[in-house]
Length: 194
Ligand code: BEZ
Image 1 (cartoon, protein in one colour):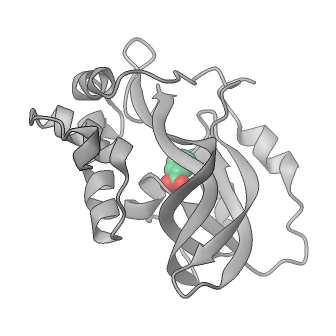
Image 2 (image 1 turned 180 degrees about the vertical axis):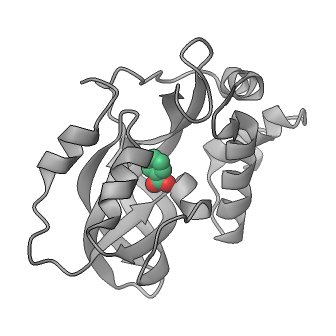
């Protein structure tokens, strides 16, 4: 799978006759909301874990020094908290370009805080995409993020804004907060205390 997913995404869903679609955001879509939406609700998806395992050559790094951004990894029992937006289908014309570096749209079921559910879409960078970097120790991920910057700004800003947004949502994303702790130069919290 090439890193540029614009054409793949455009061929994946036929939105004809559909007025609005729920989109689940778990990364920059939580805090960088530069698209119109009809409704916004905190939500959770099950069976997926947020991980800084996707390379960013176009936004938060460069081809020579890629940054790291989040994707979702399948993990039974996991829950990923994020923000859901009900959007007009034409919003995907913009988002497919914004998130072109390896992310494909997948169907998902999201659960809102009141326990109700909706079907919608989520962007996921699977491990067969060229920009996938994969697992690494959280301290190494923090060091890579600290050193990377791209056209959208420092990679550290991405991490810190995401961590702040997750805190505001009341999420306890152990992975994100551990990397944040390393980046800020604090002692990582022992796993048993998390
Ligand atoms: C998200 O926030 O859901 C997201 C952002 C960028 C790429 C993929 C997903």
